[in-house]
Image 1: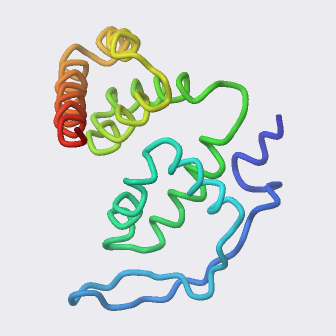
Image 2: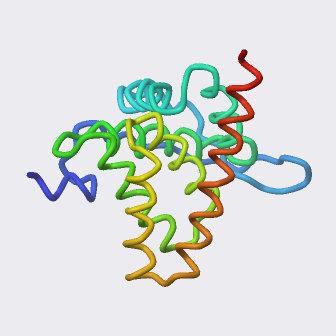
Length: 166
C-alpha cells in the first residue's frame, strides 16, 4: 500500500484548483474556477448513487453545495471516489466502521446518512445495533444512545417512505 497516496503525494488524480472569493447573500465564500470534473468525482458520484439511491442523489449533492460548491466536489471526489471505492473491505463493513466513528464523534448529520447507506449496503439492524454497542464501550453510553435515537429516526423514515410507495 502506498501510504504517500493518503497525503496526496503520489496519487495520480491530483489537480490544483485556484480559489477565488465570491459573494453569496453578503457573505464571502470560495468557488473554484475552471476545475475539471475528475475521474474521482465521476467514480464518487456513481458510488454515492449506489449507496443512497438514484432518487436521492440530486438532493444529496444540492445539500452539500448549498453554501460552498467546492465542498460538494471534494466530498464526492475524495469520500465517494477515493475512499468508498477502495478495496480491502466490503461496503457493509465500511459502513459499520463509519457508523462507529461518526457516533463516537457525535457527527449526527453524517451519522444519519451513513445509517441509511449501511442499510442499503446490506447491514442488518441487528448488525448496526451491535456496532453501536462497541461505541458505548469505547466512546460512552450517551454517544451510543444518540446513535440509537438516530437509527430509530432512520428506520421510522424508511417505514414511512415504504408506506408512501405502495
